[in-house]
Image 1 (cartoon, rainbow, N blue to C red):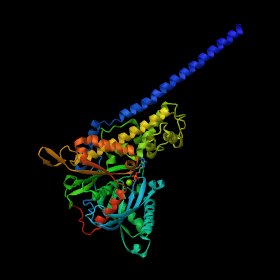
Image 2: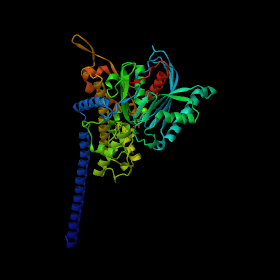
Image 3: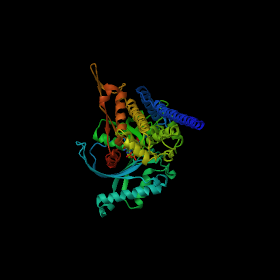
Image 4: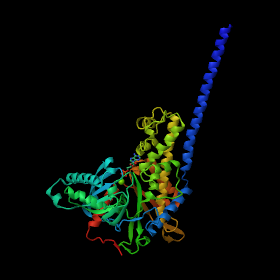
Length: 511
Ligand code: ADP
Ligand code: MG
């Protein structure tokens, strides 16, 4: 071999070694990155742990906070608001009533026709609903804009239902108004907005009477309708639940936001001495979205989400549990993963935008059963603009969805058992309504659950139901029934409008 030939051979060998070294280097770097991505997930999963021992601590904390919130105004992050609902509908209600249900994402208008046969708990002859999304610009506009819009949608609905006639202009109609934000009630039909949640921010509304705002908007357009009951969604849901099944003691909402209410003994509401109700009970609106306890498994992603929200240090439980936030938590974890890996390409700008991953999309990824996770790939490409994410990374993303949903559902389950504990229906003492020799007799206890997250996200629902059983144990759990309702928050408000516009109903007195 001549000198030139030798030189070429050496050159080729050096180049080959260099290429090999680069390739090995790349592979090592890729493996390192992959390890870091996996570590992000593992660390997240660990800090989201909700083993049953921790859930029981949350149960206890919920019951303790409920006591504190009932003992004094401001005694707990749980406001434990009086609703002035002391009588739940019993089936004797008769006639046609309307309801307006303003949630966080949707609003619904309903007409409910009641047969008045109290022996038949299915005496709702029929109900009609129209659902509409709340135009986002109205969430931060003025109260006048919001209520003008709502009143005109209501009028349009009434005209369609009644076949607009002279009659509907003369006959006054009764309305149940479901307004799902914290309200300090003055009576069953009026109350003042305490604060906005779920992304609403209409400053001129805070401190104003919600019913009056609607009443004014309805009068302005000549709609002859009276707000006969102002309730939040959980109270409406409890009313329907109780109407259908007398063993119903509590209602829980898990939709855009989350909340719960339950039937409490009037004498347990210590902060309101001298509360006189005919039934001896009152529905208490917990506003549990604001529940907080050091036992909640909080991660750095929750801390950041809260800090960047319009209401920091507020609605802590809601931010871990409800539909408005679950997709956003997942987005934050994926963003962190993408910062550790090149599998996502250059960090996609849409992934950096808050709230781009809505919870229904997260649920669709979570529910993807195709072996190659086609739906996950499609959502990443179409909604987050990240094409070509490898299958092994897509699997990690599904796992993130699972961790977030599992934690949310299990915490909600602990909240439910917390309520049962407070009213002695968790089997830890008070559930025994009578003892037969050597055998405890447990009272059947029904909790109604409603809301878009619980209704539409089957994995969430399964995790929640399973965790309630796990916390209560095999002996008690068969006696506790979770019932799922739809449109209960609206139908229940119409039932309450019927119950409270009847002249026979005593009103609550505060002595
Ligand atoms: P609102 O809270 O406005 O009264 P809903 O109870 O219908 O309305 O809940 C709507 C919320 O439910 C949405 O904001 C979303 O977070 C959640 N949701 C709706 N559909 C799904 C779905 N398919 N999967 C997961 N979550 C869903
Ligand atoms: Mg709702």
